[in-house]
Amino acid sequence: MNENLFASFITPTMMGLPIVVLIIMFPSILFPSSNRLINNRVISLQQWLLQLTAKQMLSIHNHKGQTWALMLMSLIMFIGSTNLLGLLPHSFTSTTQLSMNLGMAIPLWAATVATGFRYKTKSSLAHFLPQGTPLPLIPMLVIIETISLFIQPMALAVRLTANITAGHLLMHLIGGATLALMNISTSIALITFIILVLLTILEFAVALIQAYVFTLLVSLYLHDNT
Image (cartoon, rainbow, N blue to C red; front, side, top):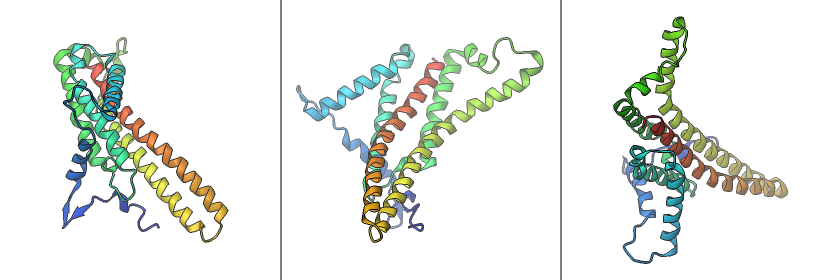
């Protein structure tokens, strides 16, 4: 069991070539668009959830911030569907890779910061030095605020990676323990199996919550810079 503990996090290959690009593109198939006048229930539910999420997330933004609506909704749909697909047996969860999460976090963070320096230059620069700071503390506070600014994309990526990876590892360990206990004690194996089912339900919620948290933090960074 210990040998294969991290096997599910290894990038899958086919004929020696990584197929992670195909895996990343696969969730887009789950969200079909319809040109019909009356949509079916699945598409209607999908549109209702998107409208509800967009209304809640974009209510704090001005007109410039609301132009990011398509980007934010695409982001939450991609992360949420990728996390949910990763809960299927023998599947690969691309959001457990820190490199991929950094690839999402850094460009989005950089775009929000660049937007702030373009449209709110004075306000963006003022964040580096709080009002009323004593003169001797100015250099130290500028350094601290600069470091905290550059840590934001790293925090975004690490939070998503750690939460998804921890859940998958815990499910793997409890599942292995359940199989091992079946030959020792059926009653204890049944208890661990119930715990595994409850943990799986929790991971479904975590998959959606982490997608919402990631997108919400990007939205808050955007709100601070528009």
